[in-house]
Image 1 (cartoon, protein in one colour):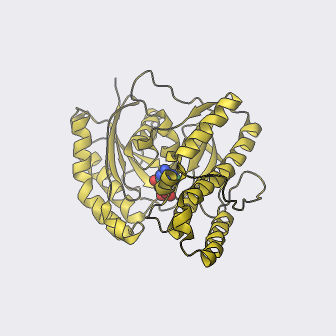
Image 2 (cartoon, rainbow, N blue to C red):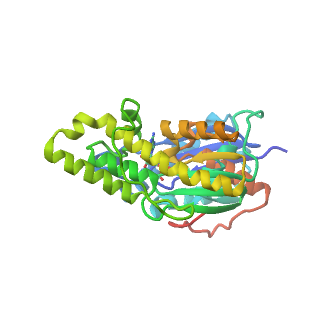
Image 3 (cartoon, helix red, strand yellow):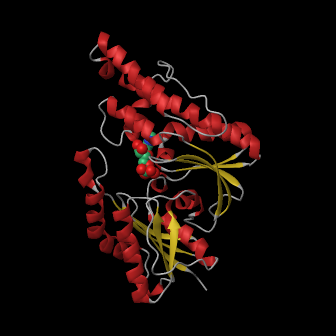
Length: 338
Ligand code: KG4
């Protein structure tokens, strides 16, 4: 018997719905929210209102694109947290209402598990997925974690940021360069034209596998402040080199701890996930490192690096197989770790 899961993601500013049947992706619809652009960041109240407007057409489109009807769905998986509470409430309430109407179970998904498990989304039967245990470098606007993934529901955080996340380092440095929010993709684009060795920024000396990006941010800020005293147009004249040097430093920080974790655990497969894993430099550096060390790299399609319901549906699919359903009185949670 085949198993069809509807996934719903609404943790931040993307409303997304996806259909997965027996682990194969049939559809994945994402509605972004332009309303936040003028504020330079996500406004929680506006996000929940936009989710309310988007959720019905997004789910409807996902069902239609998958070529199924709502009566073919066996369970609804939804992001329960972490995220913005108001946004999560929309997805959670919708999932409950539809499940009640269809008389099918609901499955709650930890958004971070979803990012890690996005590597198990297959478009074809023959697509290769990781084997447990593997290491996932989860890098986003809110997280920078090295995770030892032992099974779909057994994940050990070996190290994580003690201050800013990698995405915040990109975004905050981009902001002082006058680039729009979120700055990560702009830095990525500029970096491809710049000299990565032109500027040196400070790197942290933290024991173990934990990360820190706040020192880099401060050193970037001071470099710009001092240089602007001499040349007020310093940033404008050196945009590409600044971006390339910043990106190189972030990648070096990420890779240093990742290498240590690989040496300690002896795993042979490395996956990356989260918004920052869309970065061209990060993707290349991981691919190079893995090929030098004879490791297998899992680099997600860019579509699956940011928030999407396909990852929620696949995480829900594995929980479904394990009969891990949740009660209809389940409430969302703003904060939760892996
Ligand atoms: O996972 P995500 O969509 O959501 C949050 O955790 O918020 O990650 C968003 C982060 C932002 O910091 C954004 O600047 C960063 O991912 N990002 C990138 C790139 N694309 C998105 N950072 C660097 N290079 C990129 N190409």
